[in-house]
Image: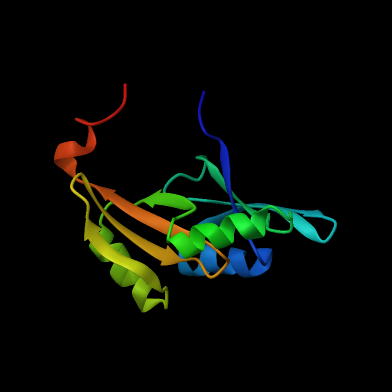
Amino acid sequence: MRIALTSVFVTDQLAALAFYTEVLGFKKRQQIALGDDFWLTVVSPESLDGPELLLEPAGHPAVKPYRDALMRDGIPLAQFAVDDLTVEHARLTSRGVVFTLPPTDVGTAVVAVFDDTCGNLIQLIEMKPETHHADAIV
């Protein structure tokens, strides 16, 4: 069993596609028209055949209160791994990305949180080498 697809709810799919590809650097994988919306996925340029991220329309009535509560409480909807958070933070900041939490050492990792401009907070994580495998769940 493996993760093939996960999703984030977005207020505007085409704006989200622009942010996730042009700013974050993901690659568009699928864009299939479904009425007024799309089946719209992106993948990491480091793993083109890896898990896809669905940029899912946020139109369902349950989405708004859920996302509003997460945003209000500062809880990220998704987490993306990076090799060097300092470099990634500088790259994204230079592209106008707004961080709600700057790079912060949390013991086993360094994390940062940014606003994806589509209604979500996203956490970046750089695992520390000495704890990466020691604390893994087996």
